[in-house]
Amino acid sequence: MAHSHSVADLRVEDSGRPMIISLTVAVLVIAAAAVAAMALLWPAADDVPRGLDPYSAEGVTRVDAEVTAVDAVECGGGSVGPDNTPTLDGACGQITATTADGETAEMTLDPARFSAGIDAGDSITVLRIQPEGQTESFEFLDFQRGAPLAALTAIFAISVVLIARWRGLFAILGIGVTLLALTQFVLPAILAGESPLLVAIVGSTVIMIAVLYLAHGVSVRTTSALFGTLFGVAITASIGVLGTDLSNITGVGSEDDRLLLGTVPALDLSQVAAATMVIAGLGVLNDVTVTQASAVWEMRGFQPTASRRTVFASAMRIGRDHIASSVYTLVFAYAGSAMTVLLLVSAYQQNLAMVATTEEIGQEVVRTLVGAIGLVLAVPVTTLIAVWMVPDGIPEEAESNDAGPGYAGRRVAAPDHG
Picture 1: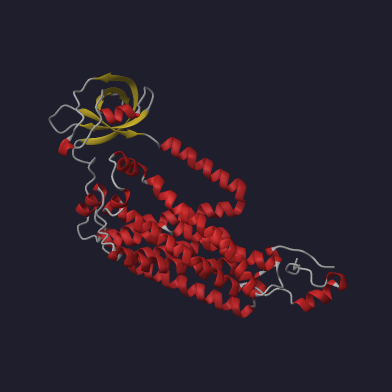
Picture 2 (picture 1 turned 90 degrees about the horizontal axis):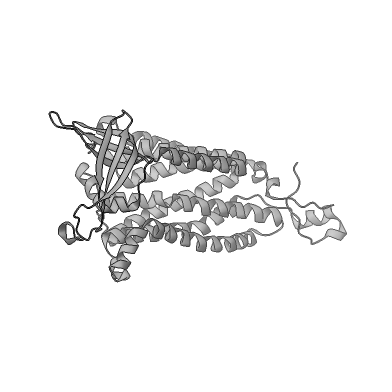
């Protein structure tokens, strides 16, 4: 009697021992090379530039406080600021708060911040300014967001674990590995003067090896997704360098970029821009490669007698749909993050095509296009790799003999190994 099974029946052993050994060696070599490169690029603490914290000047301290009173006051603000830049015209906010030390802090908020909303009972952080020999004063710094952010993080983690179970838990661990690699290696190494693009490639390789095997388990299928992802990283890095050079992207597109360059004068922000293209595309790239590898294994599970060409064609039909949705994802992600800039462009009634060529917007356009090209090319490559690695199905003759005359020619899935 014929049985119908899913991809779960395709065990690692079905790929053949020689292939398993070859893939294991290949992954270990790549991992060892990436870790060795990370060790060589790892900066000493003294090599990482340390800029002066603007809020750590002598006599300046940060203090937690709670708003006790909010009053609107006229502050004589105009509608035009320095360099003829428009500013919000309206009332200022007179804020009274009680600090954690029991002090009464009074401060004034400009119309823009005041109109954004602040109420009695809000938890805020203020600057206590008291230079030696002078009377203390207070300035509003920001709202305290630790508690709500922690609550959202907890809800996210619990939801992922409840629905995805162990795989979700390991995916969260993968996020931890990613943050650790970025904060402890990638960012310090770039600040220390190492090649931003090389650091991004090495860091991305280590992150992807750890994240993929943590979230999806050690298997031939995961390995095929890893190879596809590494190809995507390589092609994204190459096109990123080319796109940055041809578009004359300098990396100096905002006030933050200028502040960073002032803090680390030797930093090549053009290379940093190319490096961000590699890191920014990792999430979507990982998504499409894992999906394509899974699609190939599912196709083989449900069509064990199909040729590899047929499996490739079937998986690519899924891949084309995924490409379309992923490209939209990249565009929507940028549109959402740059909504303020886009609204300002619209308010100024500027030509969108002209604005797209400016440094600030052009950098994001190049980043989006480079990421999209990388993931588009990664889909067929990952599919080819997965089709090459996926185990063979049951030959048609064996299927017919096993199933009996009544089942000849019918499609069955992989044999039951359980």
